[in-house]
Image: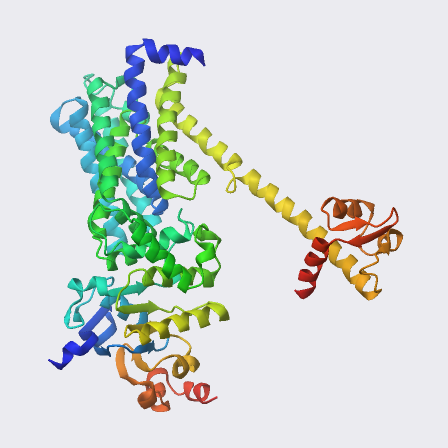
Length: 246
Length: 368
């Protein structure tokens, strides 16, 4: 009964490619209204974990509950930001076209996006500071701008849970600040943010919760309590101790 | 040119065939756009080649040359081919391009083997099967054309119903899935229609050239627009025009078979678009690069002038032109161009000064 309070509740999730398990028996609870980083070395299964949660990656076992209900019935409450490299940016569309896609989930069949959806999309674009670029062809954006467009598309979903795959990977400093401020604003509105993150040094500064992952879940908890050398060592091996203590 | 229109209006056979090839061109342009944007350009080629053994098998099994029987055979082996490509990619470590190559060559080879086998048989019943290699538009009947138009109508309806879903799926399939869009269903639907378009095109254009009908209009259309809807419309129009013009050319010239002529017309559209399309075309891009280069060189010059004037405290009063001419990269021609740009002005015939705009530009460059 307590479990229904979690924004995301992953139970017994296992994923394998061929023979090798990529994720092993993951139990993960994300409380409502937190900003959680998922950290771990390359190949730890960070992206796979969120893809499995969202039904993109097939799982061997496991269930995912969103706000106490099965994910499949709660899709509208979850917005996903994939890695920007996963799409071909030469697709014939403008920035606004892409952001409006975020509103499609709440629109029914056959219905076309109207003024209201446009307004939602423009609002999202304004938030990420991309309003002046709304009519630009998406192939003419820089890496940081592409990432902002993806964030805006997720914002246009007006969801209560945001799941992002390395949103700060390869973006400029301005974009990083913009994105982090947006995430913090989301949290202050009571929304839940789950981010795959690669930069250990910024974890305590940006996030209040953290999950250490390396095929198995090493630890989950508030940054204050569990972001320490012991867990870093368990996740990454000894070398990272020096790195973080800098 | 006038001859074409006269033909169009007067000749019944021509009218039927032109209508058929136009419908085929429109269908393949539309569906081909999806294939191109989804990086499945070669899928069409594999499917059309894979259709050949189906045609010959249908003939052997049913001893019939009725085009519907043969096309049903083509449909079966085409679908089988595309499923096999999918299966190979999923179950083995072989990549898509290699899987397409394998399916294409194995099916086509097997088809050719069957074709030569039936052709060696003493009776003449098999005559005309080889027309499916390069197509024979002249055999298009009113019923074939009706079928093409019905398929075109259904494809349009599906596009209309699933427009936004298809749009997200082509751009970002994983994301579409998280929106609750059934990407698997749409994928199957689009593939079925691509196979259908190919099979319908076999009679007209043939297994060897059919993939060009899918790819050429789409590739040409992409050059002209950055909007998915417009791209589909342009591709359909180019496909339809290729059909009509190709049919007209082959009808007015002796010994030119229609299928290849249609493909050549479509390829001409591609070449034209690659060269002359605004912004994406090769020529317009080259011109833009040249223009940028000139502009950059001028900006460099104005920066040189500016820093000289600042260093000599002559920013307001201006400076003798002769002094400027001694600077690096500055000559009469450059001074003239800078003047034309209104970045510098003459105070009198020998003294020049920066205009406000020139100063702004130079200061911006200095900041970098």
